[in-house]
Length: 488
Image 1 (cartoon, one colour):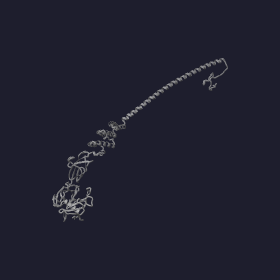
Image 2: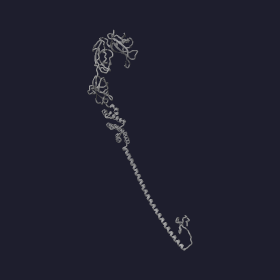
Image 3: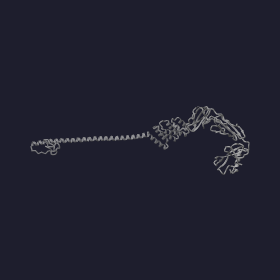
Image 4: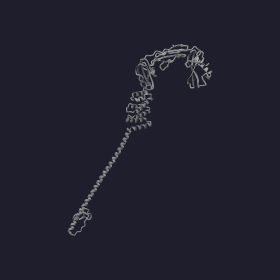
């Protein structure tokens, strides 16, 4: 039999569907035994149903209790997890704050940019001592940074602590890792500090121990290097024009006999030294413009040359009362040079090329022969005292020329003014000459003296007879012979 409700097969003898619990209503033929059997069956079924219902209730209660237990467990776990998460979050936040604090501390303590920033801020407030504390921290963190040392040195400088300012930089100069530009700037600052204090010896010492040749060359004006010789020591068969040179501006002091040179007693080098025949020991030292002295250096030279014979002068020393020409005999051994100021002639003196007129008054001539190799002969001296026995002196001769030109209206006054020039004419004595067949004459040169005091020589010459004072124009013909044009 099938259940009319769910269609499931109903076991024989059952009055309800075990699947859906539907009661089966069957009305059989009434029999007492059957009724009792049914009643018992129904009671049994009811008991089973009650038992099953009670079991279901108990099962549901158990399930509810289990559910509540589970809910409580979940709630407890959730609470534990929540508390753990909150604790973890709190710990994380605390950790982050600690990390940030440590990072800030480390940045403040160990960050070079921060130290420099703080140093500059303190310096702006003129708190240089605090600024230096920051730069010192920065230097401990980055000892090879020239910029930090320069910054700290500047703060010491502003405080007037010059030595401390220099010491900070001196500690850097021997570091090989410094770039040249940084090293140059460091030296510039040290030298500027020393220069301000005029500590030139300290500057020189600093540069002398510097291993960088470029730095030494850059600041060589503070160094006093020993003089350099143009020739090496040795024997030579020619005259040596010896040049001495220094590394910078200053003076070289020297001796030629090997004695120790002195600033106050030795010669100062101003021009090359001419080393002729003989032995020389040149000792020299250099003093720069800051008063720093170099070491003394020495060179030895042996010059093996034959000196030419001395010049042969035509006139002997003495008093003269008539014009005379000073002649020197020609020589094949070299050129003749002379002076009239008492100095010893050399190859830079006047060269003798033709007879010289004896000047009026006292004069002193010195002559020398210098060979092509530069060897000088013995010097020959001549002293003359030339005077004319006449009443016409040089001043009167000049006056007579001016008076004659005034009479010819070339001059407008005796001061030398003229219509044709700006300024005035002046006349100067040159020499006394003998014009063959005409006598002895003062020779005068003519100059134009402009308003600024500049004098320009003209081409006109004048000759005044030494005994009569007669003025003349002096001319030369095409053969170079002298002639006269009278101005009277």
